[in-house]
Image (cartoon, rainbow, N blue to C red; front, top):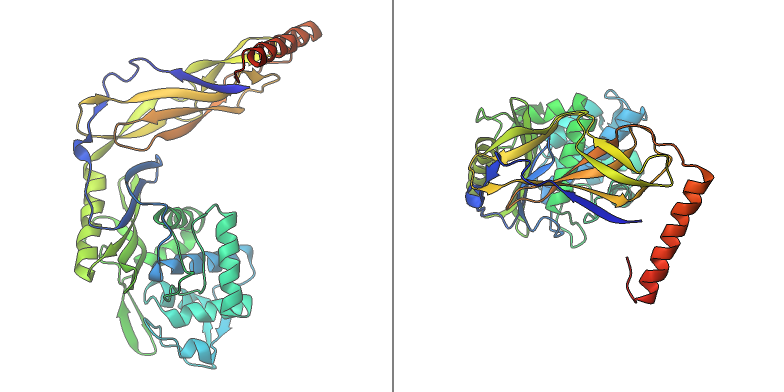
Length: 383
């Protein structure tokens, strides 16, 4: 098997773009993604592990959401407050040692008030100790594919081993929005009262009327001011992360600028229709030598409004494909390239069944492959 690529020539001659839409950001690390299409709109040092500050509370919340989803706890379950949790510094929910607090309140204490004390309560009651909870967070992050995340605590309190990347944070935000919609609405609550104290949500985008509905701010002297945000307008949702800003005002201005830019600079286009043959892939050891490739749904691309250079598409797969193949098998990818943007890949499926060929066909195909390999070896090349 070898890597195969089919180039579409002039198929999107009407969809033209330029790099004039590119945005400069004051953030030291940033990632902006259109959720529906998976298109990366802006990327700046997205894979560098950096201090996440309170943005790492999203992982604490993910652990709690998973516990709720599995039935291990409910929103009415009460967690005991330890002395350690009560004495936590920084942003606080103002919990009291010895009290028992419902998870429904602790969630708001973390999401709205960014309570370090509430995070420790959750960590100790789910894992016994905060250190063990941090170990579990790191393990779970690795299982989810968050390869640049490591946790030393549940809060984002400064620690040399507390690190996340912009890409991991955007992935985590996307996961929370998709997997836990019943809890995600809490992120849009603008205030929460606990212990007689009203605290406002620190997300500066919620009051701007631009569709913002989450997620989490963060700040330490090492990390600067950061934010993981999401906004929805019409049928589009944008998720982004910025970090390293110098002030609360800078963070608010940069976040608003990015959200507005992401919605105003790009438009959705139907690139290919569902169930329409896009290309053919080579098949070996089968009753047919070719198979049609189709998409199960319309392929929607996100294209900048400006138009000067051609969008290109290509089909990539490891081929030739070996029979038998069933209709609907995921066998290839459609790659969409827009100048100045990361490529986006969409799955392609087998259009029809291809059964195994006769014994003679399979023998002949195997012999051809062996002969090709022998020739490659003889000429000192690898195919």
